[in-house]
Length: 85
Image (cartoon, rainbow, N blue to C red; front, side, top):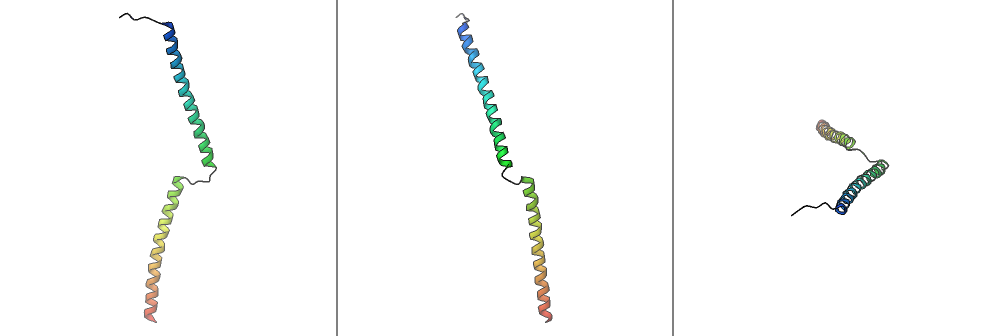
């Protein structure tokens, strides 16, 4: 079966390829605009970053442990004081 070259089909193929490339470019541009708008929105919300949250969480854990240790020591000292009285 001989292969023929059809200029019309070549033009249609080229047009479709160009349209696909244009659609991909538009998609990337829209994604970039949406990402930019989301970052602007999030920056204005006074949200805390993950690293800051983790640091404060660790501080709270240490403070809770220290509070438990001091509460136990206070209970021990109160018991000693009550035994002496």
